[in-house]
Image (cartoon, rainbow, N blue to C red; front, side, top):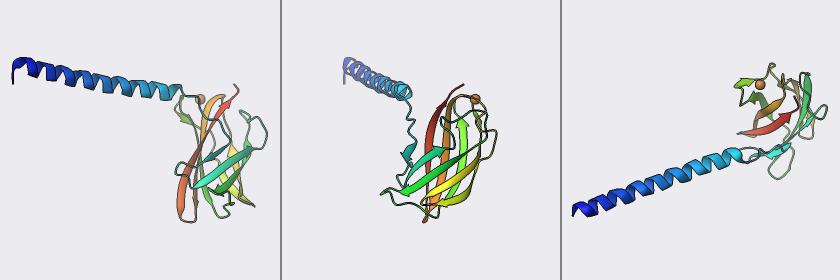
Length: 149
Ligand SMILES: [Cu+2]
């Protein structure tokens, strides 16, 4: 193999690596620029449950203790009647969570669950995570919220 061939191969490999890196960066920045999904009904991460929430008062208030009704169904829409639900809230850009510890306190029937003790201490982008366990399956659903300051 001549020195020239080696040099050319090295150059090609470098170019290929550079192109891969550039493509990776582009994908990452495109992902961060995608608009967030603020839907109040979503499938859980693994598709086990279809979940929606209804706040006590709309729009969702800031600095006010509130309850939400969470509706949990199977993927086909059948209400889930025996779910265990853990609740967590977070402001990803601020690295802090909720000032309270909300809990699912009551099953209301027809796949509806009462979640009490929710309070957002400021406006901005929040995420609410519900970890749902029912019929031997555990799955998580995340809702984005943009609250008025
Ligand atoms: Cu904050």
